[in-house]
Image: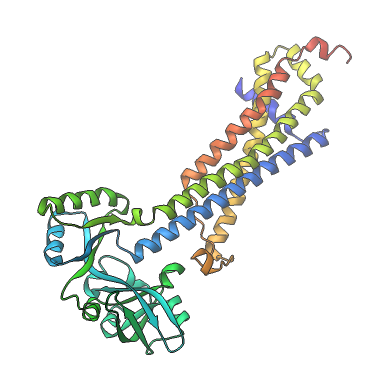
Length: 400
């Protein structure tokens, strides 16, 4: 009986002589479609922001770091121990990191100076891909600055700057700007500077010490489990070691938790748009019941049960919701493709850390949208369907 009731549902929706009912049906479909488009684009943008930030943060930083308090003295032994016993580690490299003051001929700005080994760092981060000028070998010749930091200092490749570092006995050294890097995260590019680890060890007289080891894992989402294995290995090797092991997730958990919460909040708010549109469907079906009283009574009189009448109006609501859902998915998909392909919406980098509006649709979000729309529309159709099924054919035809 499904095909028969479904056919009648379509007949009630079709234009025919009831131009008014057809028009309000159209309004209901448009309302659902707009809600779906809004959901798709907003969730896509939130996914895009999250994925873009993850890519840039992970590309510019190790997935796992071991830090000494304040130094790691025997870092070569530690490096070999981890490489030999933790198979999930794809690359490992030592680093020195310190808060410093950058001074040019025009400005003085606080920032971070990181000393790395050019030969091993490319196995841990994607810094080699971020160079706008120079390359990893430039680290041995001087200092490489973040693009925004270079702009603030008003320096370019070949200029001299002074670096002031240290707490108890501050030291100052002149470096030549040998390169510019840009990872795409404004807050990172505005403070960071790089040089070779040997240059920084000489500046702070560390005598072969380092601040930490950076590592790259084969699976970034298993970083927490791998970090636990490293902690156990270090404790087993020497229980008196005072090292802290942290992951990229721990260091950025506040940022990504905020993004996840914002995505959920936006989804709830936009679901309300679909909910409001579903009231249009409920009112449309209720009006259809009263406008089609004669037809309903005739269907009951020729033998259709109240359950079959209920199905007709439930199907009608689902058909309207389905049309709105499919239209919204189609139009939203086209808009998302255009936004991703041509990136015609520009953003201020100093606010959003990205210059273009990122968008990334996931199958999980699309499934959520479909289930939410069909569920809400089905609930909105229950009352009108029940009203139609309880109609008494004798009363309905009494004055016809």
